Structures are given as C-alpha cells and as structure tokens.
Image (cartoon, one colour):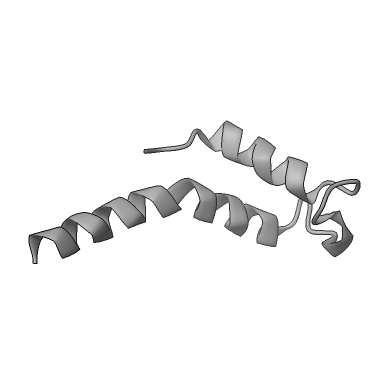
Length: 57
C-alpha cells in the first residue's frame, strides 16, 4: 500500500536520468522531480481512502 521514499526516489531518478525515457526534459534534481516522487508515494494512499469512502456510500 505504501511505497518506501527511497524506492520511489530511485524509480524517479531512473526515469529522469539523462539516458532514460524522460531524461530529455532535464528534470532530475529539480523541485518538479520531488513533486513527482511525492505523488508516486501518496497516490496509492489517496486511492485507498477514496475507494473506502465511495464504498461506504
């Protein structure tokens, strides 16, 4: 349910490094990359809370 921040950081770094798919955007070590990582960390938690709330309705 929850992804370790270190693992999320490695995933984002791997995707955003220069020789990888999204490296052309030059986002590695920027605030935008940190926002992407935070979204990856918290998206499953938010989806779970939303699913539970909708199921109770």
